[in-house]
Length: 246
Image 1 (cartoon, helix red, strand yellow):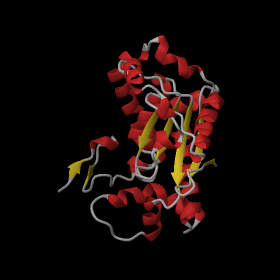
Image 2 (tube, rainbow, N blue to C red; image 1 turned 45 degrees about the horizontal axis):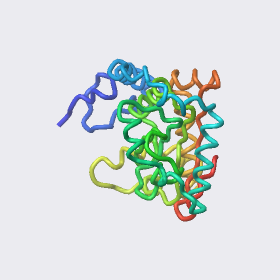
Image 3 (cartoon, rainbow, N blue to C red; image 1 turned 45 degrees about the vertical axis):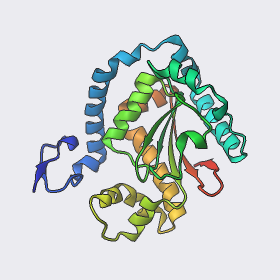
Image 4 (cartoon, helix red, strand yellow; image 1 turned 180 degrees about the vertical axis):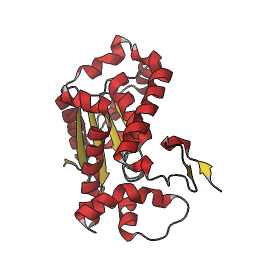
C-alpha cells in the first residue's frame, strides 16, 4: 500500500519506503539534511552551552583530532590500548550532562568494526554514526552537522572496511528480503567506478561518501573552508586492525 514518505520531503507518494529517487540525489540530500538539521538545532539547542570541562578536548585543531585517532589505532594494532585504564565512573560523571567529542565517525554497522575500540577512545571522545555501507543520508548529514556545529567535532572520518557485506551485496545485485536493497543505490556509484573488487569498491565508496558530506552540507563545507573541520575517508582492515587514510 502506498504511503507518504515524509522523510524525503518531496511531498510525493511512494509505494516503498526509501524508493524516492529525489531523496538520494545531491539536491535531495541537501534539502532534507538542512531541514533535519534545523530541527536538531531547535530541539537540542540547550546543549550548545557546554561546561568548560566538556569543551576542553574540542580545542584541538582538525589535524590534531585526526592524528589523535590515528595514534589510537596504532595502539590498538599493537595491543597497547590505554582507554580501558580510564576511570569509567569518573568519565560517566563528567559526561552525564553534556558531551564534547573531538571527532566524528561515519562507519559501517558491521559488528567487526567497533569504532571506539579501533581508535582506542573511551566515553565522550567520538561522535559515532553507524549504518550498513557507511553511506550518507539526510539523517546522517544532520547528525554529523550537529556534531560539528553544536558539539564542536574537529574531524569527520568516513570509514569503509574490508569484506563489507553491503558492498559485496551491491556488487552481486541479487534479490534480497525486505528493504536491504535500498542500500544499493548509494553504493552503486563506487562499484561503477572501481569495479567488482570488494576492497577497491569499499575504498571508492568511503571516498565518495566523504565527498558527499563536503558538498551536500553547507554547514560542513563552511567549517572546512574556515579550517575548523577536516573530512577524510579511511579504510579499516578487519584482519590486521589497521586504519589507512585514503
